[in-house]
Length: 192
Image (cartoon, rainbow, N blue to C red):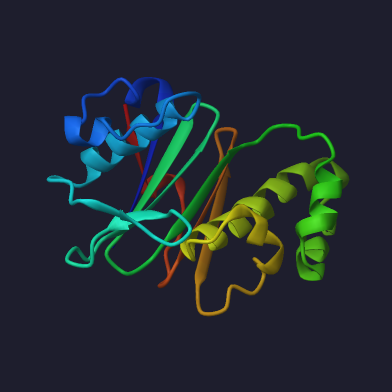
């Protein structure tokens, strides 16, 4: 089972969550996204098991709960991928201009990813950049890695993992799962 939830940080960060969870919210600019992510978790899993953190800081449930999840946010959008099949990763990015995106692609994309991007017409290459970028991020996050490891992942050869991506409503979404899961608009559960 895979479930993908999508919501707005501006709304979800105002939701009531257990005080034992809320007391761990960071201060500063990360606070709203953190609260929104925990609100999504409380919406998806009730009662919410205790959270633990992996070596690189990836949150997860303890070993007594056969559920895995991953959170991602961009702008006011936040996504939660929930699974009972094993570790998962997801990434969401607002489709937007990014200065020097080609230089970033040159520094982080594999030869195969460049070939994929360059097959696109010039006016679609920025969208292709975001599609590939979100797949790579989903792979890194599935493994519990950190952003600097993105260069070592090739989203055209996921090696025993399954990738799926979707671009819709100004967003680029990607998931990395241990078993096949097809990302489409009709599998997204929107949370107010």
